[in-house]
Length: 247
Image (cartoon, rainbow, N blue to C red; front, side):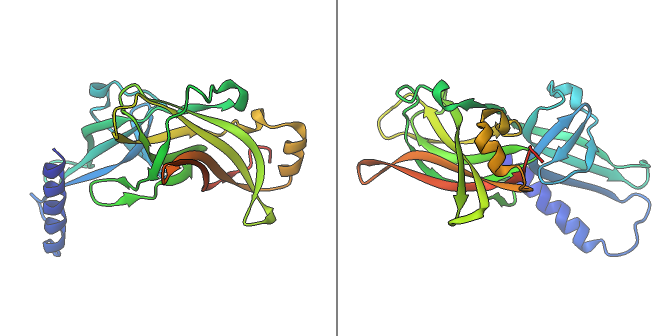
């Protein structure tokens, strides 16, 4: 299916390239767009964008407002018969759950003990996302871990407040990332994880809230455990930027 959409997209680009003259009656265009979309009734909004696209076959897929999914959208426009272009879902690849934050003492670290192995670019049909990003109050991380993907569970707990690059004005909200997965030899799996960080202030102390109260933008830093040369080590990565919820 992915190869088909790749060919269809290439064909569409070729059509657009060679159709340099003004549009004439009978010209028909089809394009395919692979992306992550957030659902709002019968419309969707692509990641990193704010414009809404009306989807004509939304009811077919059972998606509801707030759902976030990777989909291939089909754009179709026929100058001879259509006043407006038509957008449809051509393929629903994956519904991406949004997970809540947790307090640090709410996570059983002995149970959530699967190790992480690497960060991976998030691959779309024609491009890649960076492995870690924040958008619209959501922390995203495309990460590889030891274990089976089926029935794997994940948790992100608020660790506290820190600084980036030893700059007291460059403040980070720090998180701990955990995984619980069935182990099977050296099997590794990759999954895009999304956490709602819009309510992060609910997990901060009054002292921590006072520390960030006058700052417009905060960074995120994610701590996790990985295996290096047979030893378990803690590492951390910067996850992105988001608007301070206390401003």
